[in-house]
Structure formats: structure tokens, C-alpha cells
Length: 308
Image (tube, rainbow, N blue to C red; front, side, top):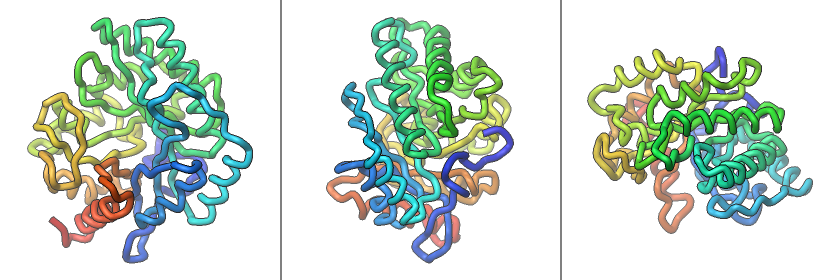
């Protein structure tokens, strides 16, 4: 996203409606059960016009082809409820850093399918985890990820951007440092660079050793030095159930985990990030609406100066 902090694509501005009738950039991952066309109404049910969804079952390899009717249903629903920013998260099975040639190829095919569906739906972004270098060779895992990313972008033209998600760094996972993400992006040809950015997950960052609680400013100085703030395409706003630098990934409701409310207050009021889309992936429990609405209201209250 060279030169602009706003996600490109069919979403116009990254704005969303708040409970007071004003506009903001907040949203959440919502269910696409029953068809992707149901997702926009679910976003509006939580008082949001930004969303993330799965275009397929994330724990299965099966690659569905979206029908013309399904694509039209999503596009019409999105327009009908004024969804400004919409994107997908790719399958949990994809491992573009795998040293196993068969798994790498299968992952690439699956990722190409995800990117293709996202382009067809007119989505603004696809979020992807950089994967696991299960042979312990981090550098080669990053190289393999970059190769797959380039091949997918070449195979599937369009405006949908790929956002590399910062990971928590468990085990052989790659992508837990800004330098890891920069190495992948650096290997993307210049003509494709505009389609690559970064998704910053607050839970993952804290677990990976980026101290948003006690050293917030230094985290963003480092991000800008290594990646450039213009690469920041999306926030996943999640508190963490685990302590700082734990390398563990388990999300908690905003302000109820080890990050606490202050980092989220700072992100919400940081002028550099006002237009960056911010999506929840916090626990939903048995209710797909109540917890999301509560977390979004808390985030909005931080900006209004009345929360916490």
C-alpha cells in the first residue's frame, strides 16, 4: 500500500458506522455460514461496516468454486449495507514456508484459490500467516514463502492485496519479527509490491516480544524503520491470554488480558492509525453479536475519551 494507509480495492475509504451514527474504521471477523452473502448483514448486526471472513472452511483442503450467484449475492449484500472494507483470512492448513515439496505445492494451490475467490468477490485484502519452517531453517522458509507469494500474485491479477500477518513465533513459525516480514516483501518484484502489506495482530506482537504495554513508541519506531508505516494495511485487535514474549497465541477480550486497555487506547487515538482498518478476532462464545458489540464499544470509548 505504497503511499497511503488506507486499504485499496473496492472498499472506498475504510470508514464504518459507530453506535452513535458517526463513522469509524472498526469491524470484526464474521461468520460466512450459509454462504458468503450472509457476511455483510452479520457485520452490520455488530454495528460495523468493516469485516473479515472465510471464503471456505478454514480447516479443510477442499477448494470450492464460488458460483456466479454466490459472488453476486455477496457484492449486492455488501453494497446494500454499505460495507466499506472487506477481506478474507486464508486457510489454517496453508503452509507456504514448508520444506515438504508436496505440502508446499498443495498450500500454493490452496492460496491461489483463496486469492482467486477474494478477487472475484471484490475483497480488499487476504490475510495470510507466513507459515512454518518445519526443518528449522527460518531463512529458507521465508524464501519459500516469498516464492509462493509471487507465484500467486502473478497467477491471480487484480486489486486484492495480500497482508502478511505478524505471528506469535511458536515453534518453527516464521513471520514473528518485522525483519522476517521485510525479507518476504523485499523478494516481491517491484511491479507487485503495491499488492503486499502487513497485518499487525496485537496479541501476536505482544507474544512475539513487541512490548506494546511498556514500550509502545519503540515498537512503532522499529516497525517504521524496518517495514515503513505505509506497509501497515490492517490491525487485528486482540488482547492476549498469555504473558509478554510467551510465543503463545490465544486471544482475549479487549482490556481483559495481559495487554490490558492502555495499548488499545493508544492505538485508537494514534493519529498515524486513524484510517487503518481494525478488526476484532476476540472470542465470541455462544453469541456472535454481544461480545463483538461490547468490544467494539469499548474501543470506540477509548477514542471518545470515556472508556477504561
